[in-house]
Length: 112
Length: 114
Image 1 (cartoon, rainbow over the protein chains, first blue to last red):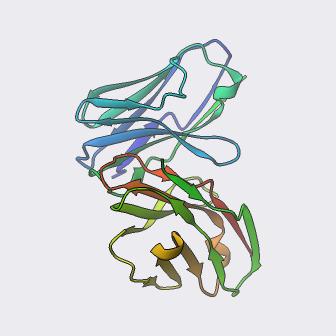
Image 2: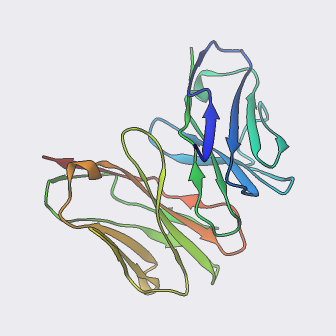
């Protein structure tokens, strides 16, 4: 069983479109994250979600919005996609403070 | 503010060489946690180790070892007798004790040639 799963794994779309990436974890964790990894491999935190508390990285454009229907899911919705949004997006979860992160396999988004 | 510096962008070695990946961190917290993650060419991120700020004992796991030194704010990672399968990007990360959010370094790409 995959602990943290993301769909889709690959996403190719046109500028201006809206898209979503879904994430589910079956580990019973309370905290989930979205990270963006750029072409230089830099991992940038976008959001973390813990017990309904959303912490947003203030540098993330408001075109990005996380949605958590329940504790096991944290989806990422992106409006009006831009070329610079092309990256690999990783979902992760953890047991709590100071816990190691369990990452999904990543979703490679390509904006044309 | 938290900061993690991995000064080595890329390291290239030949199989069986020993290699050390450096990690230097900055934090004002007295309680914090340090991590190493591995990202092989397949792309997934794999947890390797976690240390808390009160435990400076070095750790060894097979060919991997970690040297944590608070005096120099470093948490270095050594691979002994490297193998081609060790080729990956390695990330060091820091998490304050009261936080849910780790700060990652920019990663060190390790290439092990046969």
